[in-house]
Length: 585
Image (cartoon, rainbow, N blue to C red; front, side):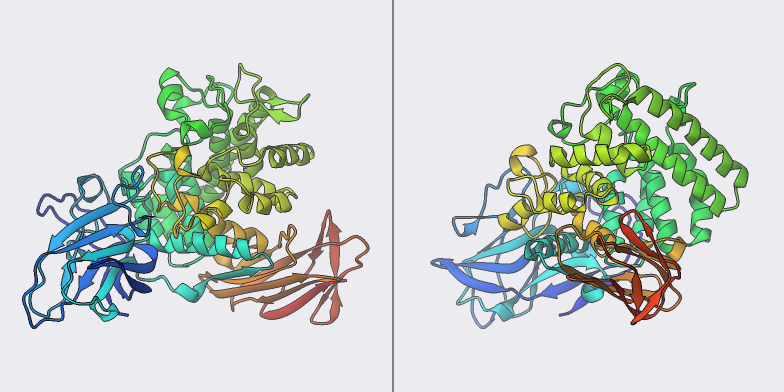
């Protein structure tokens, strides 16, 4: 396997391509096919096993003349052949070439202006045109097409290490879901920027944040996230909730890296992402007719909004701003802006009071979609729960209600729905939604045969969806963060928390990269709950174990340690480090 590496690139206008832009390092990896078979007389069907963004290298045998050869690239099959008329924006391309001599030829699909010209994120000109494909048909090849004659030249993040992250559990389908999601994160790094997929190849704030979470679960290098952040500052998009996502990205970077220098350099830019120009006297964001018509997203596509009623004060939009204010207070303090941190905290308290008074219905224990409507959608409740805005005493009711509604949201909102469920005692429901029957789960994606997650739950929910969309890859971050239970507790992972949410699983294990090195977690649940940890040097871990009824305490490496009960958890008083084995008995 060979690779050609391009670092941070500055590309200039050339041959109709445009704009200078930076990108994190990527490389072209030459991949051999998984299988080749003759699909029809003179037509070879080549399977590369998984879809990736790339093109081909073909090497003729030489020694004789050859006529035209037709090469077809595809993301989909139909009746055992490359689907030449796939649905929506599923990819297909065809080119004709005439082999000559015995030198390897680069075969690239035709240029598609929608994703290879500005404002799309451009890939290096030396790579040639890239498109996502798994399957290739070669028709008219002189003689038999051998595996040694064809390679896919696939573009990936050059810092990505396939074995740096892993996940296995007692549920084989859940393991397949993690693998699908994790690979999607890797494959969609092809441009050196966290883009929304292949249709546009643009950076969108919400897509980038969800992608960032999965990326950090597989690669601790922050460069790709940061070039994406810089691009979003230069080319912001229009949705109301997308602006606060920029604060989320900066906060996640701070917790991941603890890099105060980078944060200080970008802190001022975050202030414009708080929707301050739309805040009323009560501290709540207001929406005018244009905001309601175009800006307030809630969920996407439109049909995924669970009947959301849009009003002048939108519960979802305000939930996003409140989470952003909380995080801005932390970031301001981190860069020594104590007065500004206090100001953000004050704004948050004022707005939270109005949010609760005007949007929460105490009779039902649920949030309304907005001021002026009694409709309570899934979204008006999942975002407040995920963002910690629901009063503690009301959280069980909201979480149970959400769990009972099922997956009445898109793959985008599913990230936040599942976060809220995991964090509020509904981990069995969260895992059940991932593996649910029907066409609104990741189980459905796995069973469809796709090798990258989709932009929507199925084609009929979004007919123009991409089949290579990382915002559909939420399990890549949710499973390590919640099932393994590993998250940074202080910036830079100097102190982590390990709190496994087990659901109905009996065991799980995995590893994840951190800036300090590999973190390994393995747990099993039988007569006792047992947890094995390997914590990298420079990190300590606060451990919280699920507490069974009748259990009496926690043992570390065979010795009882001080721990206290906090709800359904045993909280170990002293942090652990190195390789340790903990048991709840």
